[in-house]
Image 1 (cartoon, one colour):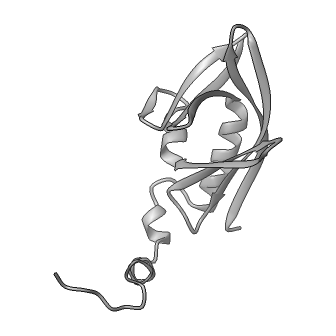
Image 2 (cartoon, one colour):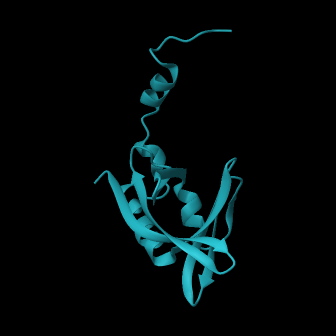
Image 3 (cartoon, helix red, strand yellow):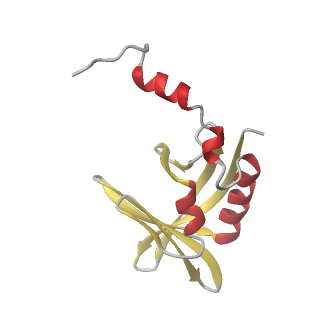
Length: 140
């Protein structure tokens, strides 16, 4: 298995007691071993955010992140949830996911690439070749 995806429903917290349910998919692929993609399925199309798998893992137990993405554990009406705060120049959003859904997804991603072994799956030569284009470089 080289990737894993999990569908889940997130709560978009709007404030004032109103929330919107947002269908989403979490995706992990061994070709990008440090990253998780969160694909939010909206009426206007899919919106994808990419952030560190370790950020999501650490956010299960402690507040982490700053800037564009922050993750922290919380409780909502007696349920354990994971809060995900996303910010961009066009706005911000606070989403809540069921902790069990996130844990199930992360556990499956650790089967694909165990935590701490990500570098073993990275082909540094191929990554450098891609960055340098056709293999030629300029010297300044």
